[in-house]
Amino acid sequence: MHLLRRGFALLLLILLGTHALPARAGIADAPGDRLQVTVITYGPGDTYWERFGHIAIELRDTRDGEAISFNYGVFDFDEKGFLLNFARGRMHYLMDAEPTDADTAWYVQAGRSITRQRLAFTPEQASALRDFLLWNLRPENARYDYDYYVDNCSTRVRDALDRALGGILKATLDARPGGMTFRQQTDRLMSAQPWLMLLLDFGLGPYADQPLTGWQESFIPMVLQRELRSVKVPDGHGGERPLVVDEQEVSPNRVEAPPSRAPDLRGPLGLAGATIALLLALARRRAPVMFAILGTLWLLLSGLAGLLMLGLWTLTTHHSAWANANLLLFNPFALALIPAVWRAARQHPARKWEDPLLIAQLVAGLVALALHLLPGAVQQNQPWLLLGLPVWLALAWSLRAARGATTGVA
Image 1 (cartoon, rainbow, N blue to C red):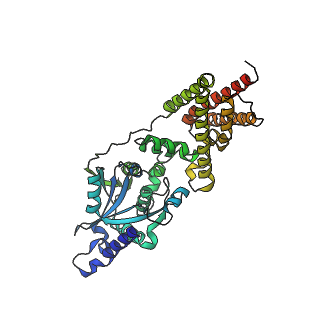
Image 2 (tube, rainbow, N blue to C red):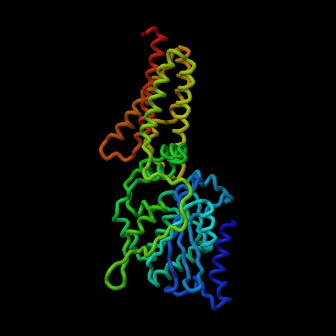
Image 3 (tube, one colour):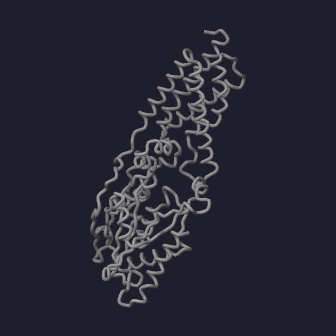
C-alpha cells in the first residue's frame, strides 16, 4: 500500500536519517525541552468526506526547525474489499506523517482554513507524545478500525494528547456538556449536500441523539480546537495555566463554511408529507393512473428504505444506525402493498390480506409517534414522522374509499 509505505519511509528518515548528521538531531532524538507541540486544525472542504474538517499534531524541533505533522485521516480506495468493508462498517484508516510545509501547502491550495494552537507541554510530556506518535507510525501499528463518531482522525489526536497529559484533557472535557448531538453535528456539517444530509439523518438511530460531553463531541476537529481553549494544566509552581499558549489562523477559509446550527428539517419534510398526501387524495378520484403511480413510488421507496435500515441494523457494525424507529414508518412490508394501489385504481376487488397489512402499517406508524411523544424519548425523528404519517393516512383512506366505490358504498 503506497500510503503506508510513504509513512514508513518518513519514519525511517526520522529515526535513522539524522544519525548520519550528528549536528542535526531532529525530532526523533531531540530532548523534550526542544520539542514544540502544536495542534493544527483544518476547516471543512467541498467534498462530502471533507465536511467534518481535519486535524493533526505537529512536533517541531525548535533548534533545527524540523516540523512533522502526524494525522490519522488516511484511507486507501485501493485496499482489497474497501467498498464492502465501508458498507459493513469495517473501514480501515491509517496514521500518516509528513513535513508540515508540504501538508500545509495542500490545504492552502484547497482553500481550507488552517489554525495553529501551540500547547503548553512540559519536556517530559512532549517526549512522551513524540515516542507514542513514532511508535504509532510503525506499519504494524498505523492501521485502525475507523468509526465516524468514536474513533476517527479527531478522537485519535485527542486521545494521543490526553495520554501525554496524563488524563487532564479527558477529565476536563468529560465535565463539560456538549453543545450538540451526533445527529445535529452531522446535519449541520453536511447541510451543503442536502440529499446526502437527509439520507444520513434518515439512517441514524437513537444512538445519534444521546447527550454528549465535550470529550465525546470532540470527534469534530473544530470542536476539539474550541475545547482545547478551556483546558488548564499545572504551571509547575502550584498554579494553573492555559493549555493553549498561542492560537493563530495562518490561512483563511475560502470554502463555504457550515452553519453554526443544524437545519430544522421539520418544516420541509412536513410540507413534503402534506403535499404527497394531498396529491394521493385528489388523484384517487380524478386521475386513478396517477394515483397508482404516486402510490407505487411511495411504497417502493418506503420498502427499499426499510430494507436498507434493516440491513444496517442486522448486517453491519454501524451502531449509529441500529434500532432505527423509522423502520416503523418505512419498512419492507410496504412493497407487498404495491399491487393493491393498482387494483384500487382499476376498481378491482381487494384481496383478503391487504386490509390487515394496511392496518398493521397504520398501527406501526402510531407506535412510532407514541415512542416519540413518550417522556425521555431518545430518537429525534420528528421530521420523518411529519413526512410519513400523513402519506400513510392518505394512502389508507384512498384505498378504503376505492374499495367502497367498488362495492357500491359511498
